[in-house]
Length: 285
View: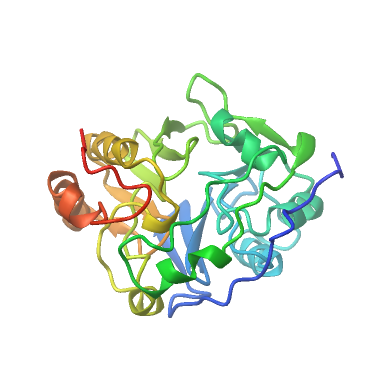
């Protein structure tokens, strides 16, 4: 293990929560979703075995909760075979260093996310001017400086395979971040979306607190490429997923997922694209 790891100097706990905080849901027998404050982590694997993977690493200072969730589902002293990151934003890597140290586990992310995970590059500043509510206004307090995982993070294989997830393939779904990925299991079309689209209007504090179900595009305040974001949603809708675990909000399933994801594609400019904001390009493709 490479012990030369650090968070950015702006790393901090974020005082945001929701009624879903601490709640877990078995979406499928081998797909479990758990909410850390306002963001979801996923555990992929049969709980009768020790063969599982963690997708994303929660909010800052959430390592103890994540470890407890893992051990409750898979048994004492269990550890994942790997941690897969959908992207490197603070609410998806918040406990990553503590988890690496505790489990001595490898981390994988898209090659375009590597600069943000190896101390080289900060994310663009959140857009507090973007159309939205209180969470958007709070976004300047969110950490954006790169974390440094040293040699503990590796680029995902270029052939689309996912280490320790043989039934899944990764899909490049940029827009919210350059190297954002989603994960698809082709045999049952189960999808782990990350923030390519979400099931709660993440910009509005009341809706975040209540976790009101409402399919939407990626969180606006951290999305910098809206043309790519739309293309990613179109790509995912074409897969005809049966289940979708999003980074924020309750999982979507069945007809509700099919109808609402199609609506998001058809009405992306009305539902997802902000009316204004410094990263908004009105000339959508």
